[in-house]
Length: 319
Image 1 (spheres, rainbow, N blue to C red):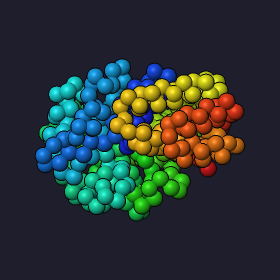
Image 2: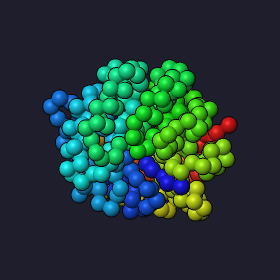
Image 3: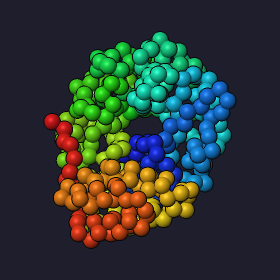
Image 4: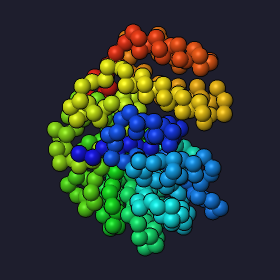
């Protein structure tokens, strides 16, 4: 089984990846938060820092591109290829309203003819492998039947399926019947993404889809950095490695964030997910998420790990 780390804007940048890799060397590949090229440029300064090879040493990073026009995607992919990248990923999954309205991310799924033309252009122009991360439609899961017909026409290296429609965002149970259809009908190697937050959730998924070769984890892996290890049979986290990881992540962010407010915002984003590991200590979690100064944040995190061991049995299970 291959495990890959989903891109999460604002969380899984190069600082997070570098620190996590030192403590949890268990991911086969990381996907970068999306690059969004336009008519003038492929990326801004922040995005460029994120994909610089020297900022990702020892990490298998796959850049993800989200574009409304094929020529923007092609230009960006070629620049990435010149930097040494040997694979790129097309984002057809982002459900954000501002993205959707610009016919990017999941917004492109609403226009099958435009999607076909887009894919035809990029596969005709580029030689490097292209993978796709997709939702199953915009409002109706059955839209995926036509989408898969389109995908099957192209030499896509891998199709990563998040089996929700755009309108569901990250809510409701993934449509596993649609993923089952993809397993049966896809001519493309598949990867699964969606709602695996625990060892039990993983086992239930694998009981239904035992031939799955790759799983992309996102929120579940941010919430529990040791999830892959536990899936592979390692003992559950006792908190010590997790605490060291969070302390080093704080130190690394301190070196790179311009101010305390931005630093706290980044740390609190992480705790939005990790809070589920401490169901009996929500009072301290609330203090961590309301801390106004780094000194308060450190104090509350230290108290939490002194009092509690992470409960990694949390989460949502497949029915």
